[in-house]
Image (cartoon, rainbow, N blue to C red; front, side, top):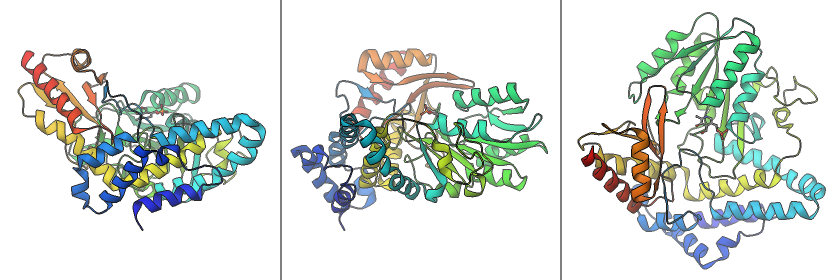
Length: 430
Ligand SMILES: Cc1ncc(COP(=O)(O)O)c(C=O)c1O
């Protein structure tokens, strides 16, 4: 079956909740669908470099054409079909909130759970839908049954919200945080795994692993770290904020016990949508962050006692999954990797320029970091913005310093050529 027909069928399967998205009925949307059909006839490698196709993908977004957004390492925009769905569900909710939200849209949560589980490669009974990685991961950080003196291993390169949550538990409950400090970029799995393993002691109960270090784009070998942890009876919490729907893997394959992600990052779902995974046998003993009727229930739904939330945002996740599947997870991963390497390979031999993210798919994907000798990260980001309207982010966090540059599926190679010109000019001034 053609990808296009598949895509439209998915939309019609959701007919109870959604009409055909207006974008797909527009002339631009029809051209976009035709390009999806066409690319289905190409090999994966051909499709990755088919700029005409990716230009049509760009038309499916509402991204600015006056600003080059290379800060998808923060949060990602939604395709038009997602924006339209959220607006439609929101209007519907406002017709009679208690009816449309609680009796109609809420009915969509179970099918959505199954779709997310399919994408994550796990059971739907292990997936809770929530608002973001912070909420998912803090559910675990505050829900684990830890005693004073129990040790948790984490890194200085983890995300601040997670670090702060662990510090709060340290203060409140007397747990002990064992910090490791990793040097990036690294293409040495042994170094990373060994650094974690050396921090484990007989008192270690949990290891917190960030799957992709947001500051610099480094991918960590989670599976191998989890194996070392499990050998010692240590539980594994994975921060997957930046990896879900960015590159392909199944959550159970990571070997973790708990995992949280934000769907408004690489899935391009509505802002304020996230997901928590808890391995089936771990659900009972994990307390929910917001109380449930039975805190020790084995039902994953105990983590969804949010009270009234935006049902429009939640249901809009469906259209983001449709869009992701239409492009194809593998094609998207390879294109993102291609785009990072596209600019990085053009500049990494220039004098004074350093690309601080691995070009190998095992250690990096879309997110890349650049440094120019003699220039502060803030100076580089300012130069890009002032002279080329490139939106990037300067990073100075622990031992990581540079400008983070992150394209997305709607980024054109022409935009990246502008970035390369900007880097060439600035490196000559350095
Ligand atoms: C590694 C990592 N973890 C957690 C988060 C928190 O994500 P959110 O703000 O969606 O909760 C981020 C956000 O950028 C992140 O990069």
